[in-house]
Structures are given as structure tokens and as C-alpha cells.
Length: 207
Image 1 (cartoon, rainbow, N blue to C red):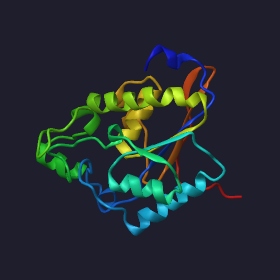
Image 2: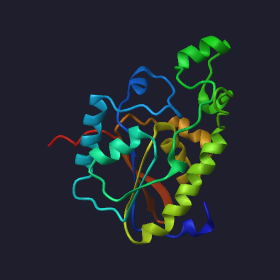
Image 3: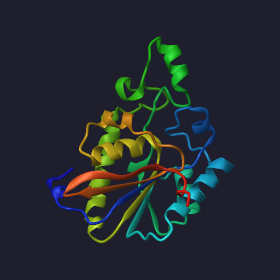
Image 4: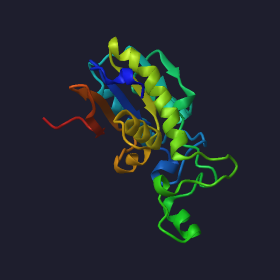
């Protein structure tokens, strides 16, 4: 991120991962495939909206893929701008395959952040490619934080990598950040240091 990001930020970047789809349920890598939400995924998106109750946003950005767009709609967001840079990792030849399937094919304990993807019907992206897109989003968002909170609706791997970039960590740090379907997170600062204010929240706390 630019040096300007070292100043204290008064507001938060809120993240929502889209609700559950058929492939997120089965563990299949879903990059460019434009799947709809399952009914359970729509319920997740509505719960995300409940978690946002009382919040207002000066800007809302969303991946153009329908699972994210529908999540933003069901969460009650308004004036949402589609941002192609928020689309999910292009998994190339691993699109639609689960981690166990890929491990069986390659013959070792493949892990996407360490080992990457191969070309297929699409070229695929490296983790650094995805991090570059995420960093562009953060550079765009940062000036808006002087005015208020900003919300991003996107995908599991993309948002984990974006959080790593925000925290000034290497992209592969994202492997340590679990993010469930429909979860809400908040990125903040403390004494000028980028921090995670909340992570992977899927339900309101019990009273």
C-alpha cells in the first residue's frame, strides 16, 4: 500500500463473503464459474445484513459475479458499485475441483497458497496476481475512509488475500485466515497500525 496508508484511519473496511453455493458447499474451487446462491446461501446473506444493522457506508463495492451481487442485495446494501478487481481467484485448470481431487491428481499434499494453479480453459492467476488486484482495491478505498466506513462484498480467497495486503503481510499469510460463506469481517487501525477488528462473524452474539 502507498505510504499515505500509514496515517490513522478513522473508519473501517467491512468485508462480506458471499453466501453458500453448490460448489462452496462441496469444496470445489469456484473462480470464474458464475454460480447462484443456494437457498441456504441466501439465508446467510440476510444474516450478514442483520450483522450490519445500524451501520452506514460511504461506498459499497462488489464483485460482478452473481453470488456476490445477490449477497449484497439480500444484505440490504444500496448504491453498490461493481468492481471487477474483486472477482475471485482464477483457478485455471483447477476450476471446479476440490483440494482432495487435486491432491490425488498431483500426488502430493497440494495447497493453493503454496503451490498455485495450472492453466486450463483460463490461464489462472498466481497468488501475487490476486494480491495486486486486492491492493488496487485498497488504494481506491483508502481515501474514502476519511469520510466513513466502506464495505466490500466478494469471495473467500480474494478477501483473505485482501486482508493480508491490508495488514502489510505477504499474500500467503491469507492461508491462515479462515473465512466462511456469508461471514462478515472488519478491518481497522490501532495507533496507525492496520488491524483486524473482527473476523469471520456469521451470527449475532447471544444475549
